[in-house]
Length: 75
Image (cartoon, rainbow, N blue to C red):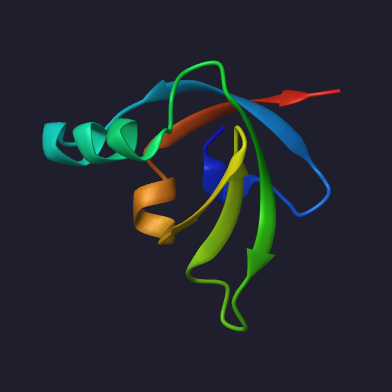
């Protein structure tokens, strides 16, 4: 499942980063790392972009970028 499919009340864990190498490097530099917890913090009126809590920080990503982040739901 990708990060774009995550709803506001769900929590997940990052399991993989896919996509072009420059984007993966940028996401890693922002702190988007495998194993980190992630949840939706806020959504804009049109649904794009969305703000996520990743680890202890808050990051705003477009849906295109978030589509490259594979997550696993946490119970």
